[in-house]
Image (cartoon, rainbow, N blue to C red):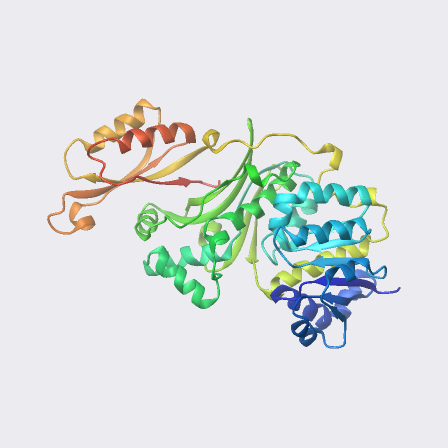
Length: 440
């Protein structure tokens, strides 16, 4: 059969990986796809860089719309990123009847509902395995492998930069700012790491997984997002003493009142496999009612790991290119007319347990006052750790740290109690609160 012709928009780190892996493994990929897959056109503002990668194998252009307008191009790969021009080009490609493969999680998390609706109306596919967790095939697992299951919850380490920083903070006892500079020096963090360290990147990915798991529209604007910038190495140390590790998790759950969609630092028991995922690696835990707990682990970023996912999408689209659109796997796993309007809960309604660290005066009655406020609100204490004053502030110190783990409580209630605790004269600094998940 005539090879499928592909146009590539953007040939940076991932784009170069896609081109090189496709060329290197061309014969194997053709055996799997049933026909050849060829990148025949590449668009990049830096045409010299693009020509250095592709040589004479593909036509290089500066204007991406030349690729979209070419009737011989069957599939467009979008690797530009961002919400702006990438959205316009994807919508134009769909309007021209071209299938789209993208690694752009931000685009799909914010505009996915519009994009998927346009693709469904036009009878084309939008494939996005590379948008979440790089080379880990989590999207395909959720859309196809776990189809028989009612998904109960998903929890994932889905940002390698933040996981590297937290791993280094734990291993070396260093504070956040010190490790961030080292991560930037090593290339794990961007010069502007805001999307990573503030949890936005992970929230984009969690939003996409939530939509597929529960059959709801993508709704990034309803996600709760909290990053790691306020974490202290002392909290990582205390968590370890209590049998927990702190990870930035993207969490989505189905609960009786709706769906939880949140990203924040989380205490996870050390005995859980996901708690032992270190460095820049990613991992996603999925709980299904039939299959139980499944774990997906691997490289969440990088040129060839992400290229692996992009090319897997190319193969899928190639296989299904001539299949009746009604018989393809829906973009969000559920048939478009069967998507649910189940609401995403505000964070104040989420029920979870907590780690609290209070810097308090080292005097009698402090614990009793704190425990009394918790008891009045109906919050029970699961575990407690109190440091000697000398261990916190040195010999002669009049301050100490009081660390509490609570049982489950509604976040709104916990917020009220923290405000009451903060008002105590014996509480000497802002209270640190980190959510805790047993993931059992």
